[in-house]
Amino acid sequence: MKRSRGIMAGMGVVIAVVFLVNGITGFRGDQESDTGEMYILRDELQRIKSFSLPDTIYFAGERVPLENFDTRESLDRELNTNAYLHSSTMLVIKRANRYFPVIEPILEAHGVPDDFKYIAVAESNLSNAVSPVRATGFWQFMPATAREYGLEISGEIDERYHLEKSTEAACRYLLKSYQRYGDWALVAASYNGGTTGVDRQIGIQGQHNYYDLLLTEETARYLFRVLSFKVILSDPASYGFDIPAEHLYPVIEYDVVTVDTAVTSFADFAAIYGTNYKILKALNPWLREPFLDNRHKKSYVIKVPVKDARISAYKREE
Image (cartoon, rainbow, N blue to C red; front, side, top):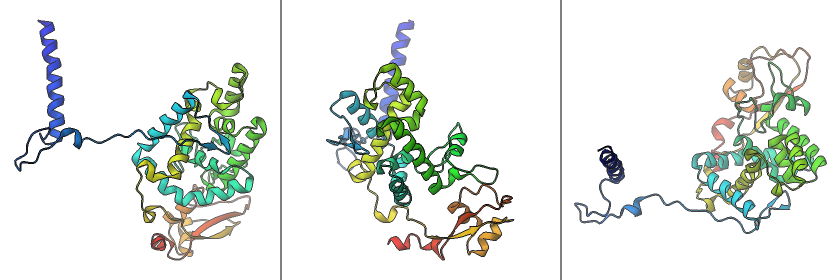
């Protein structure tokens, strides 16, 4: 008797699923509608495409060995995962139009390969994100590491939120890692897993090649996540992202004001320069308070939008 109830319960689940599917499609399945039109259920389901990998791909001028099954399948996983994170990846593509022009020349000036701009994508989706462990900003610096590489963090200032300065700090970190490894793939891995963790696995396994090392899952996936963004952002349309140029986020034009005294109210400061507190903070998220005591009389460069920048940003793109 218990077995019979189990069978009937199972049938009930199957029937429920059938009704759910038919309910979604309006009982159209393979049935003929009132208008005489024949509907085929399978034609109404979303088609899921497995995206092809490029024939060859390089990271920072170093060839990725796609002939290795493990390398190929690792990239395939991340490429298809991020291609199907529709809203998230779409926003990254839009933001890249605004932020890559800031990041790229800084990388070039420091001699860091351009591909490292995709590290900022993998780390933060090109946003001033804060992780559960309090890593912060586009480059996800922890406080101690940020200070070690020259960023100011205080009650009023947190330069992890300063795109230009945090990118410069990231360059210093990356170049130091390259001096250690002489291999850009390992540099990228160490940015995620830390040099201590990477060094430990190199010692255990006797390998000095990222693609030959067994690493923690997060670090093992990391470079392939970075590469997947390189592939998608280099040719978004091939991965299903149909984004008109006018939908990309434009660069906001600004002037700069140097401040070496206290600022009692950034709301008043913003008004002097024809903007408001919200937009001032959007351009300067590293200013963490509505005031600046500046007891040490340091010099800070603050961005203020040019006249009508807020309303004309998209008009300039038309």
